[in-house]
Image (tube, rainbow over all chains, first blue to last red; front, side, top):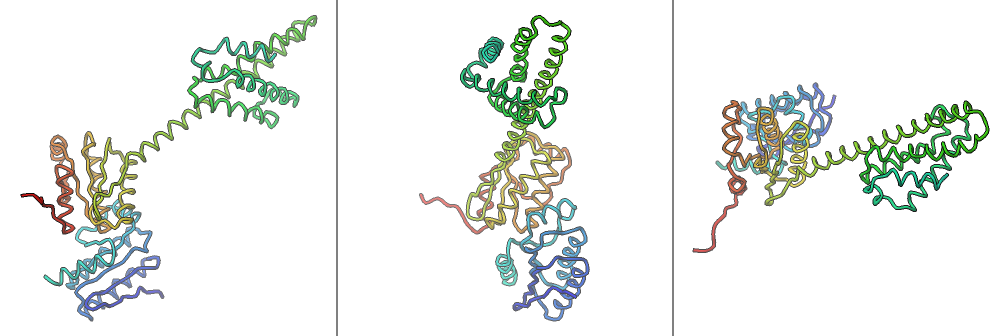
Amino acid sequence: MERIPILRMGTTLLVTIQVDMHDEIAVRLLDDLTTMVTRTAARGVVIDISALDMVDSFIGRMIADIAATSRILDAETILVGMQPAVAITLVELGMSLPGVRTALDVEIAMELLRDAGDR
Amino acid sequence: MLADWVRALKAASTPGAKTLISDPELQSQCQEFISLFADALSGGNFEDISGAAWTPTREFLAGISRSRGRQGFSPSETALFVLSFKEPVFNHMRRAFEGQSDAALFTDVWEVSRLLDKLGVYTTEIHQAAREEVIRRQGEEMLELSTPVIQLWDGILALPIIGTLDSSRTQIIMEALLQQVVATRSPVAILDITGVPTVDTLTAQHLLKAVAATRLMGAECIISGIRPQIAQTIVHLGVNLGDVVTKASLADAFRVALKKLGHSIGTTKG
């Protein structure tokens, strides 16, 4: 069974989604990530979806859920590198993911997290 | 026969059309048509011009009507090319049938007339199709021209929208904007709607979608150039622009964008 690796960089967790997200992987990722956040007491989570070129409403909801859950666990979550086609699809589906922070790439996201940590 | 035809064509064509096409060119076109027509006739099929024997003739006529369509000939002028061929043909036939019964002449004239009518209608169809093609291409070009994404500063994009926003146009604008955001890694994009004459609920909806999509990609979108009337309309319509940053002018939006990126503007004098 495939699973998406979660990398730990200091107090930040980095998730890069490089496989076709299907429902099972998404559910498993939510499980793994929340477990990791609590175990490592991470302060930030960066989810890189630049390789994701297709989404449906379920995956869209999972992404929102993952972000909301890790925020409850007190980890700032940033969604990174969404493709134009994916962004348009999500908006057309009526899922503009309010409350989820976004950034153009991982570098900018790391900077945002560092700024948030300084404060 | 060729000389007769060219003379008939010239007599029938309007002064404007004469300047568009030179005599030698007309002569060679007529000559080619006659030879192709004779070839096709020798195939023995007088009924159906969509058959294989007529393919060269059809292709030749299609080429002629397309080029005339582009040169600005009217459909009737284009059809005239084939239809004016009737007179010389009929004269020629009358001479050939001299001394024979009228009935045989009439039957053959009828056949040829029907054939030439079909070819004439065919040229009109092609002419129309060529014109429609031109209109369609111009429409596409206008769409492309109307969506320039400008890089104002390192990290700041601007998209001045001019004209009415409809669904298909918004789609193109949104795609162009998002592509550029990725390509230039710009965290701020300014949508300037100074050139949008009216905003209705649908247009506002489209704008909000563009803003939401930009935000999802990790960039921020500022809407600028909202004229007083449009601001009033938006409020009257009850459209909630929510947490979208809006500015009155592009200059204001640019200043805000620079500030967001940590730049500041100051004067060196005084």
